[in-house]
Image 1 (spheres, rainbow, N blue to C red):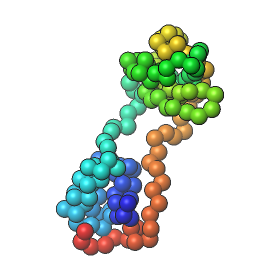
Image 2: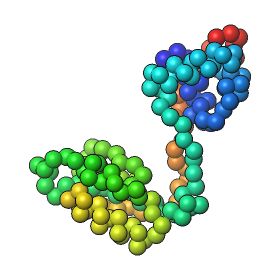
Image 3: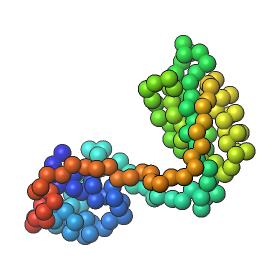
Length: 159
């Protein structure tokens, strides 16, 4: 990927609501050049969406937990993600290396809801669970550090 594309991705990762005008100013290109590059990055799948960062506490989902799961019988089909997809409390599902097969990020209103969801997970996927409750979140969903060469850091004209 070209350095200027990396700069565009870095800027949009930090603030996905940047206007093309502001983005062009940040990376030193014309508005039309930035618009074309963003469209190409989207077509190539480098940028595959834009999302709002929300306060889960404001949505009455203040309890976050990580739930590690592993099957009772590892010889059975590995279909836990499909079996659990219907549970809206599961924010993310990660396939992981190690003793566990998947790590689930769960967001619920409180301990009773967490207990209910854990039972639903165990029943639906025929798995054992190990749960870690989050006490606080100093940071999350940080923009990735995208390495840039010196030329991408300096504004330039054109596109």
